[in-house]
Length: 433
Image (spheres, rainbow, N blue to C red):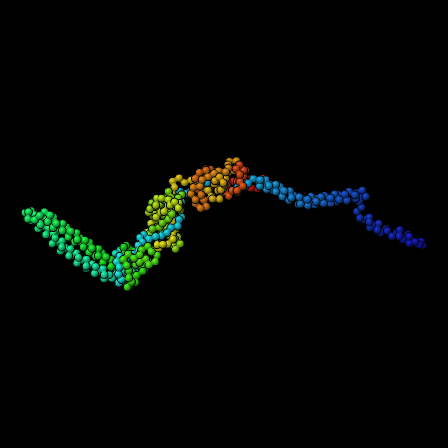
């Protein structure tokens, strides 16, 4: 019997493992292992390189684009960007708005023509009266007595004239037969003529006093409205009063004719030549918003006021409905027409230089040309250019004070050409306008 030492057991033990390992695939050779690891290492390096390149692209490319955009913006800013407008024909009619003072067609202060006491008054303020209507009645007993005396003097003068006339006729008859002297006959004839003159004087005095008595009734001179009444029953009034004084003028009534009104306006000298009797005109007031009151230009002073340099014009308006009140304020619209309208541009296109009013025009080469112009009519936000501008010009709107003649500019989007159509803006470097 043979015994095995532990060493022998260890040498014999691996046999089952060897049998098992014989079933596994053969392990790669030592020469093949380094090539696989090399490929993995290369793939790792390539991935890291791509990652680095991606990170570099993410950080550098935006900076490059920003620099490119900045360079393009600087290139654009080197040329001044301007907006242009095209001059267009000015309207042939201009609405000239002026303040006007509304006055009555007729205005009269009524005074007493005879002295006495107010017996009755028949019209108060606001009353519409007709021409010849009695407004008040004055009691004049002294005047009545004077009229009676004057009529008695007239009767005496009439009797004296009749006697003198008959005496003169008899003496003329006796003169034909040489019964009286020529001188005596002429004296009788002269006496009759003197008596006739006395009679005529007394008749004139009677007529005067009759007229004074007729003034006991204070009447309206025309159809109108009573605006002032200063009389009371029993008040003493004097003939004529004291017109023209600020205190106690003696005015009994004040009457105004309001069915037709006069409106006075002062037209500036520049527009005075275009205001004629045929000029269309209408009125507006704040009391009636949206309503137009048709009127007509009646007359003008045909002379310029040397103080205000304006033309005084009267405008008549029908006021049958009584909507307008005398003494009110109204706005007068004058439709001034011109046969040769010029071109108009916005007020913002004007440059006020020491040498005169100037506009900046862009030529065909996008260069600035400064032109002196003369202003015609003023339309508020627009002005008419009388001389110095052509319809095909491109006028710079809102030019800066530093703009110079011959300066290169770039026409911005939104500008209009001579035909009034939007102009195409020039492309700036980088594809941005």
